[in-house]
Image (cartoon, rainbow, N blue to C red; front, side, top):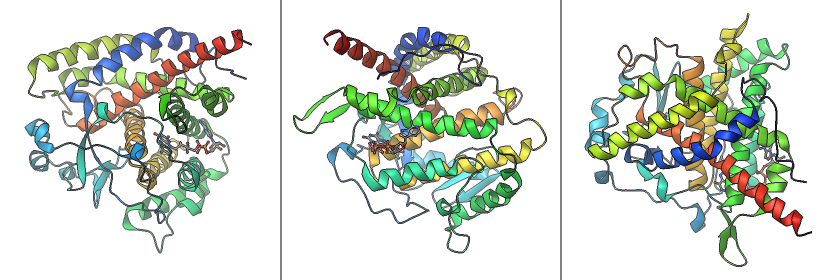
Length: 402
Ligand code: FAD
């Protein structure tokens, strides 16, 4: 059955399904325009980094997996590698630097080093998330590694062995194993559920996209596949709930960023487009304030709060590394963007207070890539809700014909 009508409060938020529902179309429309603007459509990413956890040789050679990169000379000069290397984040004393990536203590994700030779600019509007055909053992291995992380129930098999671990994962593995023992006794906790809900919501959103932008291999036609959506998402209402949860979480993070974004340098060399971008951001913010009712103060409090948060961060950073194990370029691209988008939201909500988010006291707090990932991920989630609405109509039509 298609249990895709939800009502009542969304767990751990102050929002309900009806409120999100009432704002979905306007949000989807405004975000859809925003992500086409030059500031938001170019994303620099390293799609060549090796999987640090296992030998990944299931590279998908299908055309549907391919990502079209662009020439760096087509992006504004101050975004090119040479200019970026002059203001390199590695000058941050808290940055932990690894080959091709780094993180700072407050980050929930590894960030790609956008000065590295392997990082390339992608025009996201030319590489939309869709059905790629990536499936089977490789895809399942990635999903199960991500679920196995599940906050405090980490299974060693997904973590690099301390002796064999590549430098990149060992410190995380160590931290995870040390804090695991201390936290294991606490059993289920809100934060663990939040971790699961974030991941399950991302998974459900990816499933919704691939079912909506589906390629029928027998006819070569692209179009929505209702049975696919029913079996992967709608027959598991809790999966759909998690898409709403992620939407509210990201909306809340965006509203907290309002003063910071208002002062952010979004110049792209096209003054008219940039001023339009600012206006669009304001109009998205208007809706975000109404819907993004998530109270971050309810999490990471109490006796073990600090340890719990460090554990959560280490776990989520691991997820960002697991994305380098995805054997399909387009899936890897959107997997990395969404992990980074959610990671940025978590950082804004749980690491940065209003003083830290003040544009004057902390102008270089967020990389452009983090802001672009946050907004594009929010667009993905609202697009999934929009697609769900279309699937509901298809379901109603098919029922009326019975
Ligand atoms: P999967 O989706 O692989 O799920 C595996 C198992 O996880 C299921 O059997 C179920 O038990 C459980 N599960 C499924 N959904 C949820 C949920 N929401 N919450 C909790 N548990 C769940 N394919 C594309 O065509 N396009 C893409 O853009 C794309 N991006 C991907 C990005 C990443 C990071 C990964 C790992 C995979 C991606 N894939 C993509 C592949 C896709 O997600 C599926 O793995 C693939 O279609 C095979 O689906 P499946 O039916 O075997 O189940």
